[in-house]
Length: 444
Image (cartoon, rainbow, N blue to C red; front, side):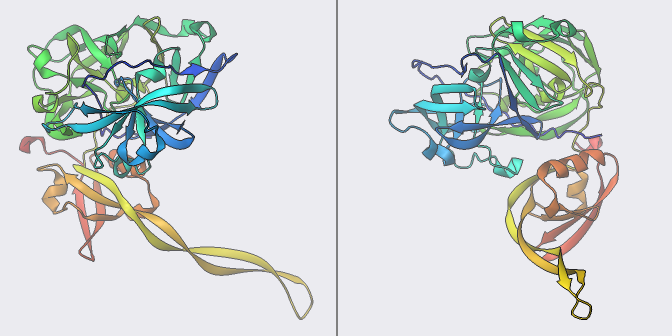
């Protein structure tokens, strides 16, 4: 079974941005529907886009109002009308990030979904680079504007969005459950759920957040009498504009999403310091992310404020942690040599017949380099002696330079509760470590 990684990278802009005249995303004329493929990387949805003719990759995030471009790619946008803004959101850093607004940009998604005069917020922080976390270039994030005008189906199994001209073109609507959502003034969708821990909490208002790779975040300060989750431990939950987001992870007894019930789902509770700059919606109790949403096929209809949902074959998959205690990042590339078996025909000089021969040749290739960025305190990885900046060489004799980041994270999940062997390079020495992928709860 292919499992997911629960690293959560969340982006929220809460600074005031003046309302310039906006041009929306539109389907081209006579288009009833349009399909857009996406990749799932670290449980987030990434689509190909063109910004002013430049090919890019953007995260889709329903919890974000703006369209964001990271500063290292700012040469792709219109510089004729820039306005400086201050960006604040998740994280405990008091300073936040500086950014600019650019107007009059063209964003093309597939060939039939286009915004000819888009407003883009550029983040100037050069350290806010997601390549190391995704192993691919991620240039920006698209939020509310993607969903604003049309019903959009999210098919997690086939990895595609379908944008419908109207809900009249949606097939087999009777197969879906339908519930109300609420789009607030900040243009974000909310949905009510029930969950049970020490008691049952009914009609809890949650942000539907495609930019959150976890299943459920709960805001402890907003939920009175909430007891600590089962098997709780302290962890890094993700990264926001204001730095690292930390908090508790654990499990609750039950979560009800409409009529569908999940037993012992995994949750996260961010620290108060990590959400201090987030302007919370009144009565909001938390967020529902992709680790829950990916278990359904979903249609979001912002205009009618409805969500359509039906379980898919992910529904009964168990919930898992990455129990390694390691944050592993793509640090750079290095040259390597690969053998290539080349076959060719050769004429035998004795009988003038063709003979098939082969020859070993070598080619230079660029291989990824993965390093340990952080280690959870008191984790088994820390106890056996692994260190930050150790370079991964192999996992259970599998060369990591032939793996991508999703492969590595899935390896950690698939070997939950098992002993693994990790070889790392440190100061030009190969070192081998064995440890069990388990969380020593009693030490947290």
